[in-house]
Amino acid sequence: MKNNFLKKIMVSIMVCVLVLPLFACGNSQETDDTDSSGSSDEVYELKFAHVVRPTTPKGLAAEKFKELAEEKSDGQLKVTIYPDSQMGADQEINEQVLEGTLDMNAPFLSTVTSFAPEFELFDLPYLFENPDQAFEALSGEVGEKLNGYLEDKNLKALGYWSGGFKQLTNSKRPVENVKDLDGLKIRVSQSPLLVTQFKAINAGGISVPFVDLYSSLQTGTVDGQENPYANIASRKFYEVQDYMTISDHGFMGYIFFINNDKFESLPEELQEIVEEVAEEVMKEQWEIAEEKDEEYLEEIEESGIEITEFGSEEKKDFREATQEAYDEFLEQDDAEELMKLVEKYTK
Image (cartoon, rainbow, N blue to C red; front, side):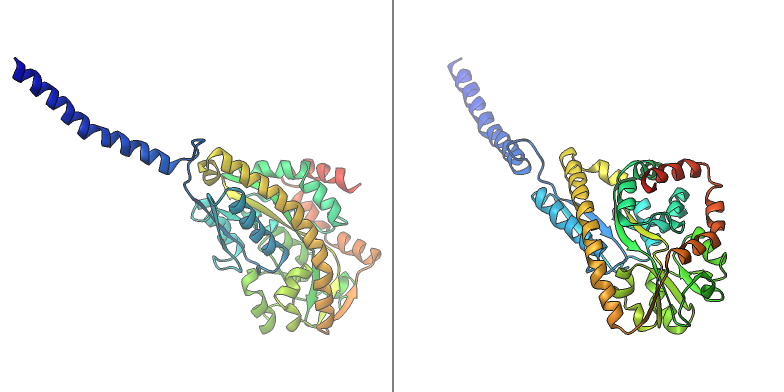
C-alpha cells in the first residue's frame, strides 16, 4: 500500500512538471500578442492607389493620411501608396477597390459615374461659383446624400477633396468665348455627361485616360483638354499647348473612399482612427489646394502660354450653350433632389 501511495505521488509530480510549462507558454503567447488593455498588435495594411503626382494637393493629402494613420495607430496601420497611375487609370483603380484587390482611392468624381451615375452632378458646368460653396455642399447634405450611393456598392466614403476649378487649354487658337471652341477636339474625363457637354458646343468631348493625356496632346490626337491648374502644371501640359482660357467652368472634386469590407475588417479602434484622420486630412487638403493654385498659375504663366479669361457674360453663354448636359442629368431619378440640395449652398 505504501509503495502504491508513493507511486501516485510520483505520478502527480511528473504530471505537474509536464503540464505547468504548457500553461506558462500559453500565458507567454497572450502577452506577446496583446498589450495590457487586451488590444492586438497585429499590423493592418491599407493599399491606397491614385493617379496624380505625389507633389499635387491630392498627392500630398494621400501622404498626410499615411503619416497620421500610422502615427496615431502606433504602427498598427500600414498605408502603402501607389501614386501616379502605377495601378492604372482612375476607373481601373476603382474596379480594383470594388473587387478588394486594392483598398483605397481618391478618384476624380467623374470616374465614379460608371457605377454611381448620381455623381454626374459634378460634371455640370458652373454648378459652383467658388471653392467655399463646393466645400460646404460636400461636407454637408450633398455629400451625405452621395455617400449613400457608394454604400450600395460596398464602398465607404471618408471625405471629399478639392482639385480646384477646371480651365481650358488647346494648341490651335485663343478661346475667348464658347463659340471659339467650335470645331476643337477637347479631351474630357471618362464621363458620359462630360462628353455630352462638349459635343453640345461641337468641341469633340473625346474620352482619353488621364495617364495618356500628355501624349495625346503632343501627337494631336486631341487639340485640347480641361483640368485645374494643379494638373496642367504638374503634368506640364503647357509644353504641348499654346493657349489657356481661365474659364472656371467646372469643379474638379475627388471622393476619398475605402472598400467597406476592408474597413469592417479593422478593429473598432482602428476604424475610428481612419475616420478621424480622414476628416483632419480633408480640411487641410482644401486649404492646400487653394494655396497651391496661385503657385501653379504662376508656373503656367512663366511657361509663355497665351492666357485669356472668361468674364461673366462668357460664362453665362457657356452655361446656356451646354444646357443639354443639365437636361440629360435631370432625367435621373434623384437628380431634382440633388439639385435642390446644391441650391442650399449656392444661393
